[in-house]
Image 1 (tube, one colour):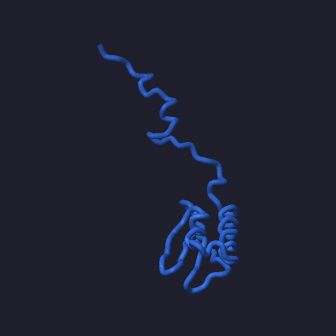
Image 2 (cartoon, rainbow, N blue to C red):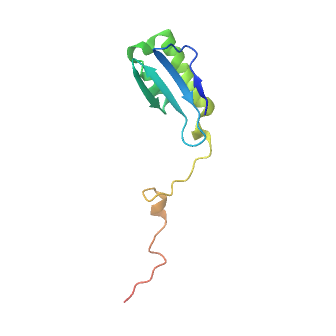
Image 3 (cartoon, one colour):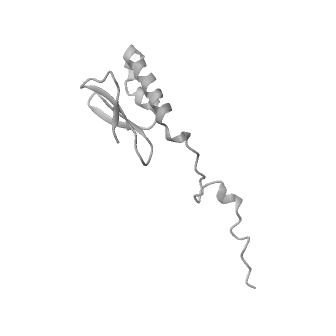
Length: 102
């Protein structure tokens, strides 16, 4: 689990992308004394506030989207949701194989 740093990091403003074996990959942003984790690449970029319109802010946006497209987990085959609240639960009638006691 080696973090991939953004090339224009400074001590007061740094961004990294961390690939994980299990679970979603994520970004870590450290800006203005606050460190946060982000799964969405645009949320990581939005941390900059008004500074996101600068040249380095645009480079960060490009890097975040590039990292997400390169290593995103959602490009794998989607898993079927078989939880209780999913739509698949409605397709199967749970009382179809039961008998009424009279």
